[in-house]
Length: 433
Image (cartoon, rainbow, N blue to C red; front, side):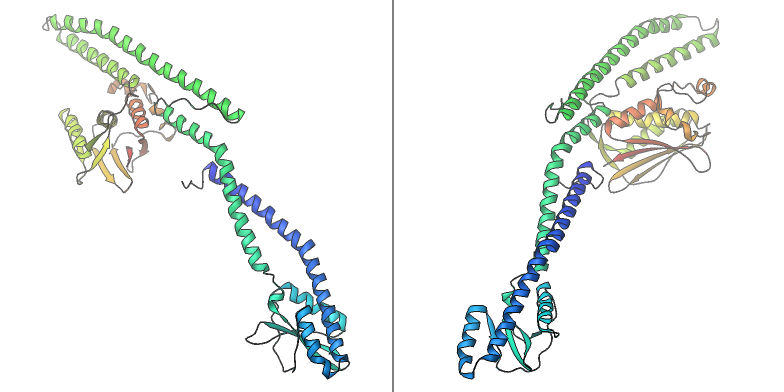
């Protein structure tokens, strides 16, 4: 599986591979300079001495000895004596050995000797001056059976591949447990209960896995205790609230209708607060995904606000389906719409929906006073209030956005609050596909 260039596995593996590759290049360079080049120079000097000796021997031989000498030089030393010496082009130096050979011949003869080539052939020729004459000797190009560029390419590419594979295998053993830990941490952050991590491998990683397993159990216990505690408190509170409600219904409204209406409002506010408490405590329940029509959900919730006297304007769009938890999505959208209605100062609320190839974006826009930049994350904390007086006036409990963020995190969604051009706030719910 291909990893992201930003991942620890990719970066560490590439770093090790580059280090191994640099080491290999330095080693090859040192071997070439201190071993291969001296051997090449010594070998070319020996061949130059042999060719000069062969040229002198040929010059001193009689014509009757030419045939036997030519055969002996070819069989014993791979040297060919040319019968004629026509003009030949100079050989382009593509191997260091030919450069060394030319320098050795020049040094031994005291004259500049060039390596010549026979067009269309594989032989290389050298004109060696002897006593005012020239003896042309040839050697097969394959005699110098070296391919430095090919060797360099094979060694570097093969070494790079081997270093990269070794680095990935080595780093994978280290990064693998870290990746599993990272995935487990994300699952805990979304309210899940990942299976315990394997407490093996290097000592440091085993200790880290052991500490995480202990922390995960403590978090699960804490969440369960919170749910039980809140459920118990809510049950205990609802019993006297129900009795109070019955008592209020039995009162004579003609005695003091304003007082009775106020008590009813307070009882309803307390019931709403208890309900939100339960939603916050149980917000990490297991999800149940279904195929949802987002425009239908938004339309139904907009109609609920219209019955309360709010003006909600839905943007136009085609049917948009999304697979997710209907309860969590409806609760999240309802809380965001309620927040816009509470703090929108009675002005219209605009709802927009946009779909791309990888996500769906829902924007809920109000024309309220807005939220200061420093407070845009703080408002997602339970019971956080920007202005106590305003919260009391609007009846907010400070739990709506906290519940929405908790449900969004559980389902892999994101919520942002941004300023709206012209004043107000834009609540953005991002649903990845």
